[in-house]
Image (cartoon, rainbow, N blue to C red; front, side):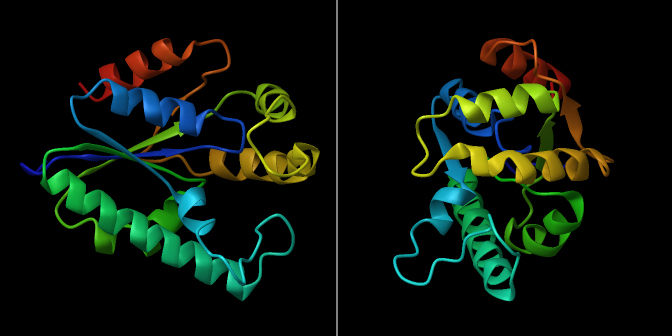
Length: 177
């Protein structure tokens, strides 16, 4: 490991708890920055491509751009001593293709939140923070849940189904001691 400040990457299917856990990790540091890739994508005012339908070239482009911005932002803040957590639904092949080039020398601590599919679906059903009917996430969540668990080499995988946020963060931090 280099002497550079590590950058956290929290992944998981919709409803896994990425935002909640990311913010909780940041809150345990004197200086923490949470970088949600979805929020960066939502900054597009005109021409935003939704990933909830067909995955088009435009959707891929907008994700690539948001991930590049997230990694660049993370690197800049980490260089200044911030604890940085990127929150994204991302798999290993995408990490290599879209993040590493922009992280500089910062080591990446990859965490996959993997509650059971039933728990993720239940959490999505109860969400009130989305501007759309979350029932449309059911097929996407089901697919992503299986896809993300298919390639976990190099990731710290945690089933947070029965853990509180604090217990989840404790386990993540203990594993990266």
